[in-house]
Length: 254
Image (cartoon, rainbow, N blue to C red; front, side, top):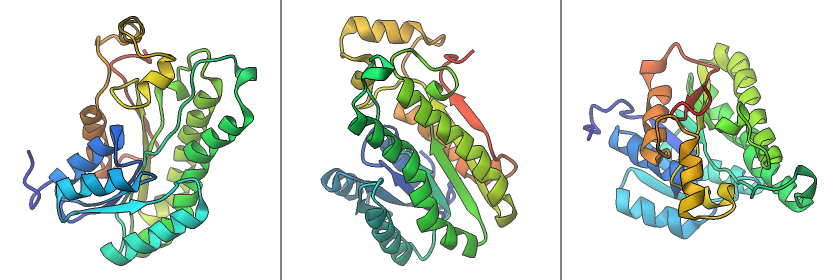
């Protein structure tokens, strides 16, 4: 484990949306181990508070619906007052769908998918970019999906929302480069998170075996896998990297 005083993110101030579980929690844990102070923004305030209590004084729990502007603005006020600024913004919060014909998806769920997976990136940009620009730069990481570049049937609207995120990442990178803000994405393959059973439509040994068989390295991803990629892309080691969508997928997209 890294020494927080000399870690790759030492003295950095970060926010991770959807940070109380799954990939988000893995990123939060690694960022704190690498020396960052981290705001854990999650719709589940209890889960965020429990993780913050476990991780200690460098973790701050913030309750918010990432798709609601009033919540995001209030969260920004809380975080910026507590930290005095922000160096790293991780847009990790996401929602999935069960496999089904594209014309059968409920309209309310369609709206929620695009609110959480797409509009939230706009809302966090509105809320945090002024402070990041005033601070002289930083890094933004968007958690997209292999579905953005190699979509599977039955997940059309989820795939489309993550494709939007990849395009937004590239556009944001171009616009924010003069401000010293790097913007990248990661494309995770299916992993051991609460969303797994949603994407499979069921959680059974057979469904998991089919999913694993589609990944050349022969296993599902883990929060630690995403945390490692996120740490690199948000650290000064990636100072010349912007506008990419890094596939963390065990070869799924080859």
